[in-house]
Image (cartoon, rainbow, N blue to C red):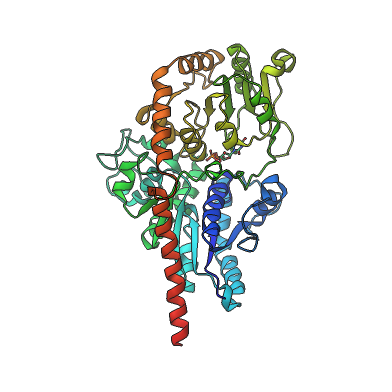
Length: 468
Ligand code: UDP
């Protein structure tokens, strides 16, 4: 019996692997077989973490890996180096993998679903005659921006290397939010060399892949991003891709989740806890870390704070003297949280976040107001959505030395927690977003449309083979 077989390939970062795995679980629950291709490095991390327990029919989800071209000890947080290395080595490795899988006629790959940041997959798909869909784990607006680079170059808003030339806000269409060129996703990833590599090897590939792909599926909703979806109707919203929607655990964690924070949350009053987490990339210097620690102490409120270990696996930060004794059980510190379950917990009052797109979707879907502290890439733009468009949060400002002070943090937390309008907005957006989920609703219809397209590919291939 011939399987309908999807090959899914994420960009190797936490915020890309998790939502594509969630999409892949939707495919397997619709009877499709999925081969999920991580880089060797990511594969090891995912399999070692507790999240490797992927609860879908095991014969339908197959986790495999190919090399990313870097040495084992190389720094994969150097996104420029990683992106360039993958671009050079991975097409050949992916082709080898597919050839290997395709040796078995019943297992042949029906289509590839590639993260939009892996635009080079298009070359492999074309060469091998396999249909391609793109997956967007970022906002649809950021993908729309990446698809518009040629227009931005023609309008002299950026140069050929992606460097912003004008200090003026840009709007892709009348219904889209204003964007600051200094915050274009490729202009704030790292130093100028990294930014240029990201522009050349990643962003310039997006447009070609997006034009050639049969479908682009996005972890977002029409209601949240009407402007972007109207501008590029080829983008199909299938979000929010939340494990908690389907009462399952989130999978694909790079670190082990510390579930003791859920028991701790059970003991806190409803709507009392400040949840503080900055995703998988954000790094603070010691001074900034201390300001945040002291601000959380000053609030006198219960807080749950994710303090991630550094690349060495050990804790890189030093707490202020006597800090842990002073906060006692009022503050719960974990190195990695089951975030979706945390945000879904009634004790949580607000989310201090770096505004990664997944964290943004998870916060919105749970009606939680945000204190926004973007770090890099698309996070500045996501903050604009939260603070200026949906009005479900407040942003933190840096002082003249570039620090977000203890006073600024406590003051914004106080303002947010006493602001009834923001909480009402958060609940109203939650209602709109969660209304799309469930049988017969728009997201399921879009997902079904996509799955029908995958199945059609198989029917087509089978007809071709019978005619041979
Ligand atoms: N996350 C988690 N536990 C944590 C912090 C984050 O499970 O302690 C998850 C979070 O739910 C989200 C992902 O990690 O799904 C982070 O993705 P996001 O796009 O928010 O940020 P990134 O890590 O890509 O900067």
